[in-house]
Length: 150
Image (cartoon, rainbow, N blue to C red; front, top):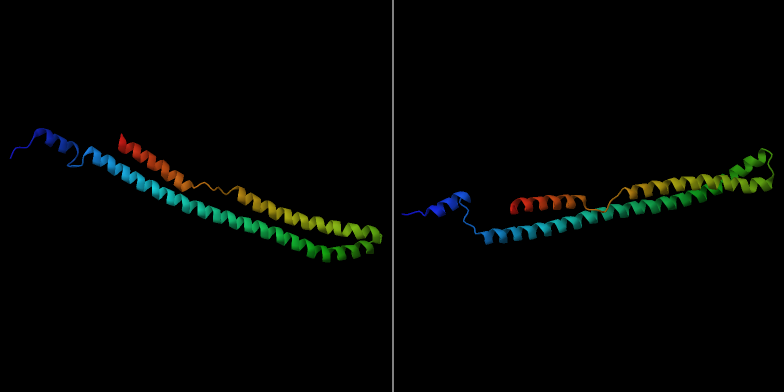
């Protein structure tokens, strides 16, 4: 049996891999396409997760606003009367106590509501909708493809 020296050198060079260059390019294309589709699927999942988290925080923002509003109404009803009675007992006129009591209670309740809204907005600002894991793996895939091609 005669072994052609060029085929032996070729076989040694490719470690016994008998695939042609065209086969390797097709395989690279197919793997790249599959990898791209998987990355798109990962991006969809990641964006869905982030949108869900943002939606939840928007819900907290809305509930915080409603609680602040309800609290303001209740505190105004009870606090205004209590403060009015206290101011009158300290010697303030009924007319002055009548506008000062609701103003003081309203400012306190509005401050609480404002702080809740600011907390929710700060939380939302720190949330990113960018799919970081997908971007990272796409960069890794790009580097892998560069390695395989060179």
